[in-house]
Image (cartoon, rainbow, N blue to C red; front, side, top):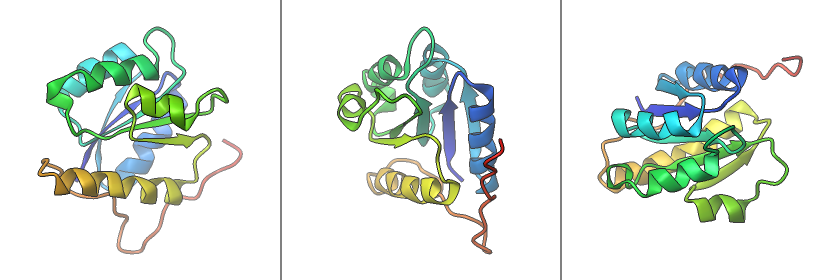
Length: 147
């Protein structure tokens, strides 16, 4: 089971990702802004951080830079998620993120794309307890377009 930090200023987005990752058996910690995310990452030592870009105060770009400056967070994959049209892979990479996924996400595809980040972390000798894997039935909750 992986420890995943979800960072988004919108409660509904945090809750959606908490349910999705929880469905796959992972522990989820949540933060509503960049400053809290940096503190939580240092305190919790997550296996993966999934963070929104556009947040008030310290945005995802600044929070990613702060996390990358912390030795204790070396090797923790940072994944940017955003519905912001101005976000792009180049800006995301410059801030220190390992990957970028525009919102909305397709749950099964999103989880499948995160698995290699945890495998790479595990191969590097980091203490990842598992990879993102679904239940034996392979099921993923269906996305509800009305929500």
